Image 1 (cartoon, chains in turn brown, orange):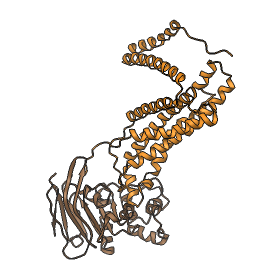
Image 2 (cartoon, chains in turn yellow, red; image 1 turned 135 degrees about the horizontal axis):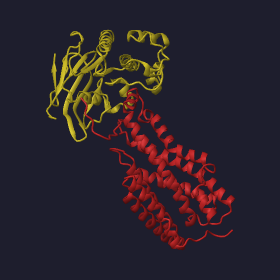
Image 3 (cartoon, one colour; image 1 turned 180 degrees about the vertical axis):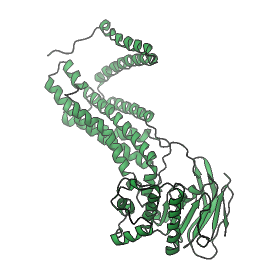
Image 4 (cartoon, each protein chain N blue to C red; image 1 turned 90 degrees about the vertical axis):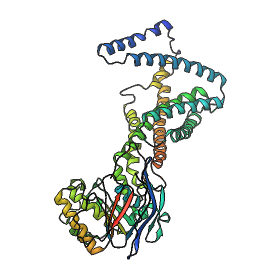
Length: 231
Length: 266
């Protein structure tokens, strides 16, 4: 893959997540080198590009799930190297492409992050509100999570991340594994949520999804190791 | 009681009839095992005759450093066999396995020989090496099973492990279930053997002692010691090796870096 660079800088709003000179390899292959990236606070950035262009790897590198050979990450102005990976990942939440549920009930899946933190889980009323917003209100919390439909599992996976109250949300082709109606339902949840919560979000998609134009002010395209920004 | 009856070379050669029978069955059923049978027979005879000479020499010399060197060589070969049997992908496992086995099994062997058997000196080769050999042989299988399970599950359940990392788990927390199941898988054969011993089979060591003219109850006491020692050493070895190699499957950034094959991702 090419190693050229396209710098992508913010213009007005403060930057919540910034990557500078990022270099990511997969085995001996260089996926991209010296890549700069920034996400503004409260923006929903749409990131597209051809299959195999490195979108997932970029997102995983931003989530510190994939090794970075070189470069620097900053979260809200703080050098990410100074933040322990578990704490960083709770603040920069990554939604996997395929919905992942673990053995156990819906409640156990939703509250998984509280097993690894000292924070108190939300009370039942607050959890009920969230479930209703995610169109999961009719699902009993003690139901086996594996019995949910794929669409419900993905909404459950997204809600699991939001309960961590992250600063940044990284969505890796969240509708790729869903059928059309489940994808529409998830997109609607994401749009409503972003309009209400203004959570800084990167939305990766193979092709531009049906997001309202007002939501995504900037559109980045990753291809051949270059990141090109369009308004 | 008298010692074991000696077997003459001519009668001993008659056991080759069983190999000939197996070879004939292989030919008849087109199993294509004739070469393996021949090679296996030659290796068995050669390795055991060589072992006979080596043990005779070691028993005569009786030097602690020679006993420990032989012990280390046995573990070296066990670690090599484990490396050959386990698909660990990008993780190099020979040295972690070798040093973990050396440390843990040396301690178990020393405890058994000096405290339980009360042999003098502590390195008495006719006790230290056979007991150590049993520990190494049994635990080798347990470690191979545990490691195979560890690496297979870390690959197969990669998304689940990463989900836990995403939720703020440390690498240790994210792989705790997998480690637990890997150690458990390695220990189950030893526990099953404890259930069947004396009912389903008479163990090799006890058989050997009885054939050598020992009192059956002395053989029973030795066998009880060996069975319990094997379960303990299996648990210790598997736990140590699995824990060590689990940590090697993650990097400092607590990212799962174990890879068995290149994947293509968008």
